[in-house]
Length: 409
Image (cartoon, rainbow, N blue to C red; front, top):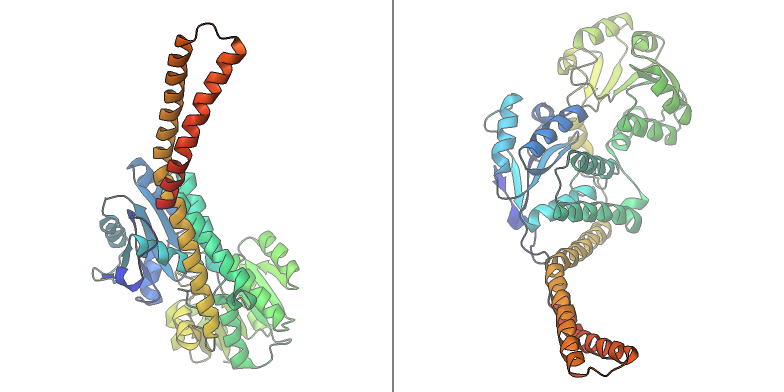
């Protein structure tokens, strides 16, 4: 395990019992990351177990990372390693951990797309939001975690809105289409088949449309879902059973981006198709984690197979990104961390201010009661003025004390 808390400057947040440990594209190839890939149903189940155990936790699982965030003194690292063992991960799997403010900064950077395979990618922000929604639904967040996650989402939105990274949004999908265009030149009317109907598949359709592709078929296990997406981006729709037909009709590119936990395209199927196509080259891009295409297909002479590791090697991080964009993004991160620090410190001082206010009200009541007991002949109007005077005096004394407490915090 690597522990890199020192990688992030820690200065703006109060002491926090907030931690993260996980695996990502920085330390593991896709063949290892896919063992950690969690479906939404699995995340719901695991968070339910955390809730019943009284733990505060969040699970973020994407094609490039699986990260476990938790709050409290219990060792979440032990829990993640037990999970890794149940999923057949190697005992020496490299996990990266951050604690305290370093964990918070890491989350902000992840949400902003600064820790992605494709620098500034847009898809991760939605993935963080859905992870947060799942944790809230499971009841595994604390009030401090709510503030931290809200701050991370705000940081991600601001990076997109206020920096060059947002003006030229990137994603794994756009990088994949860049790879295709580099190999093919103009895509135009060349046949493209896309498997899947999720967020990544939609990104592929968008990027292909922007590149001028006019002959795209979207296939999915549920054709009705594919139909809506295909219509939005000028593609045709069908079911997975049409894959062989489409590739035999002349399509030379296959992009696979489904949520399946098992390969949806086997090496035997691709070898059979290659033979029926007269060994005409078939370009295959697998964006799934777990992988959607059997890696053994690389041995088929007529098949060129690329996966996420190939994409990272060729295109990530983004080449030519202006240093000023990264500097601007870092300034946004620092600003949102400072805002979070104010909110967290405000939460610390709030109970003290409430107690101070309670004592002030009690003091005003006691002193006005004493004064009124000495002045029995006062009218109701005069008695009310005495009470108001006591209340005003106490508030005027407590106001600067309260103000200083807030400033000091």
